[in-house]
Image (cartoon, rainbow, N blue to C red; front, side):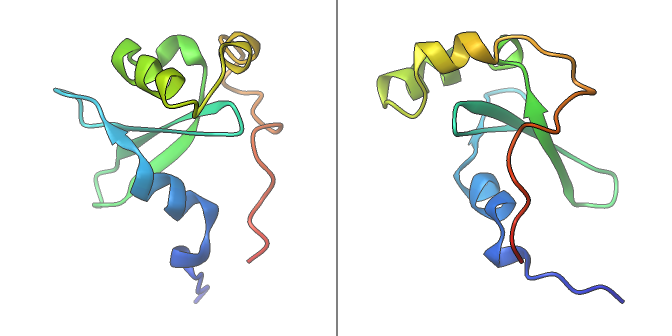
Amino acid sequence: MHTHDWQATRAETLFKTAEICEGMNRRFATAEGIAFEAKPTKDGTWHGYPIPWEHVPAEIKKGWLANKMVSKRQITRYFSFDKCDVHWALPMDKN
C-alpha cells in the first residue's frame, strides 16, 4: 500500500487555506498566480486542479486582488486555457 504524508504537501496547504464560495460545494485557492478549484468526490475526499481565472467567482477574485494574493497581470496570463493542458501549473511536491 502506498503511503503519502498528505500533511506535508503543497496541496494540503492550498486546501486548508482555500475559500468556500457561498452556495457552492467547492473550494478555491491560489498560488503563484494560478487559480485552483477543489470539488468533493463521492468517497468523501476532494479533487483539486488548476482552473482558468474566468471560472473563479468574482467576489473571491476581488478579495485576493485586494489582499495582494494575486496580481491583475497573473489573472490576465491565466484567464483562459485548455483544461487538458495543465502540466505547467505547479511543480510536484518533493515528498
